[in-house]
Length: 250
Image 1: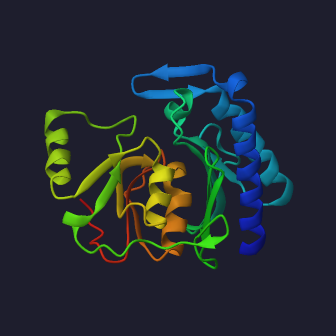
Image 2 (image 1 turned 180 degrees about the vertical axis):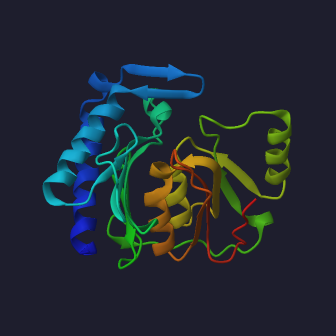
């Protein structure tokens, strides 16, 4: 695998997708699905098709897309994972926290990631062979060593358990952190950890395409990553932190 080539390709695809989302926003913001806590826009479908066409042109690896699923029956050991628009609800309401997220998986491990924050023209990237970068400049995770001084970013995926017991457990955890943030984009939360804007990210039952790219970038920035309990629907429990905080699995 040529990670230089694949990383450059992922950046090109992410940037083209981001430009499309910005330039065509008024035309692709129609809601095509809204049920319970979930929402899909025409933007999700069209942007994923654009990304897949770019990747297919210059890469032989199959693709797992949020909207279209697997491009072939058996993905094999190496495949792309694409989230064309992470933060769809934010995008729909003009909250400028959303992005394009593209990762390359090898043997169940994210080895390369690109997250393009098209709202601010910020390109985050990293791989097993490349240091984490933001717009070409190296980034690293924070130096904070105590939860009482740290900021955690988390979220509530569409299929979250909203029972009183589950919510109380979450509140109890929140009390041990200095600050808690929910921003509506797991991929952006991940790169906030990678760039030291936040110190810890965790989310239960989040989808692989939401966090795969961020996982590669956090590791490339010197952080710690755990993706646990993946099920057949590609949901995982994600824990990302700087190198000092205990990467708790609870």
